[in-house]
Length: 102
Image: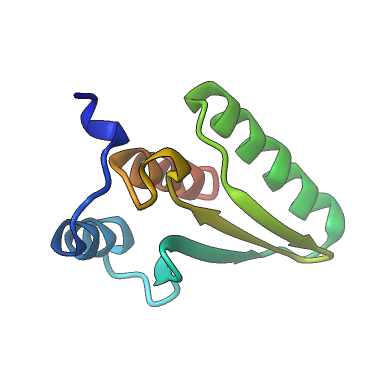
């Protein structure tokens, strides 16, 4: 079985969420069966540059988030639809998205 395509247990999700966020007070949150984070930008151009870079990550990983995009904000939600839960793939992609702004 591909371990990236199984739903993680609640304990595994909490552990990985803590590892992903580190000391960040504005990190990823567990919301309605997905991990979610909002990113703020000073203008629409920078928001869209982030969205395009994120799209490249998602395409290469073949793992696509739900996005809510507005003028200076992008909210990203990852979950794994084919396992009806949160998988390792969600956390891997979330870390790659965070790395865009590191």
